[in-house]
Image 1 (cartoon, rainbow, N blue to C red):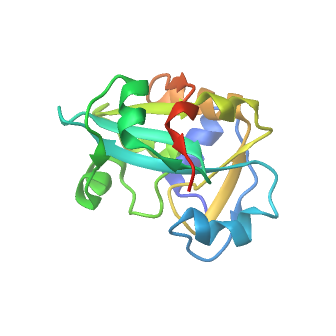
Image 2: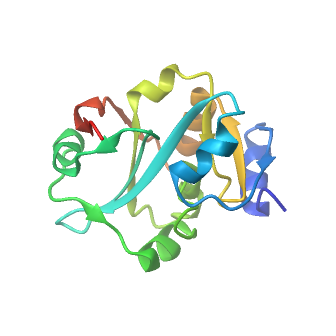
Length: 168
């Protein structure tokens, strides 16, 4: 079952039918390169963060650059970002580490998470995301990703986060 039923139902309700590419479990961007390099689209990493005020954030950025979390906090209007726990991830977004995806806002029924997409991703032909599991990848046009997130959770912020990219 590459696309879990609740996600498949949400896709169907929005008339989205993305291709699904199955692969071994991928926990990191580095793991993903071997499989994603054959796919057309922007490779991303998804950061599930909390700030000093306990606000939860899901930040979607290009896969390769390292992130300066202090600079990132300033760009999204937050303070002192750190990674949220695996327990919080499972409780709020319903996924496990390695499976974080912007599609997981589907599971945030309490609207606890603020979602932010890097503006540069909007220029990609497709954005490569996990369908709630890290054993598959679906390419979605940026407009379709925005439409999905807006329909199931509310519009994500689209922000130029390049000021938080740092050299490796």
